[in-house]
Length: 180
Figure 1: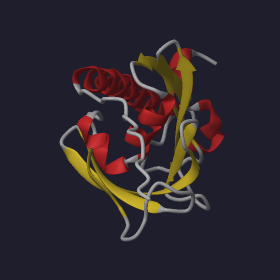
Figure 2: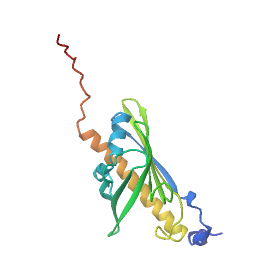
Figure 3: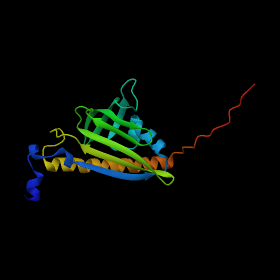
Figure 4: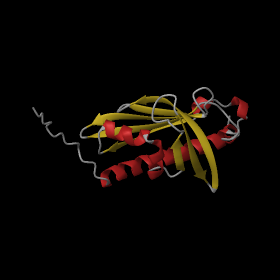
């Protein structure tokens, strides 16, 4: 099959698992600090070129099963997504699924591994199922994956720059006085 023919594969012949990527960056912070920043989903607007107005549902937070909504924009269009957290291991990993664990469309995963005085942050994107809202040809879905990979690279670079520019003093522990 020619490349041109493959670009226009019928929607039904595509495999969602073919559309995925992983990007990495080193940041000057501990895995616990980076996890705290990433799992604070309303803060993602600081780094993401596409996400704005992200908020946990009432009484929700960065724990498995919690839901949040986010407004996204691309090419002059805006839309809102609903996502559910499926993994929340402080200092190790944070994962959510757009559309929820049961019927999700995309999985976003973050992992944090110590390296030197900082952390290697890995951000992964995986299409979980095909949906015409995301595209109907291999070419559409390749373009979406490539766009999201560029977005992830921008997000990781912005996160690293933000951490470098924002002082985060180590906590100081003062001795407790015991009065008698």
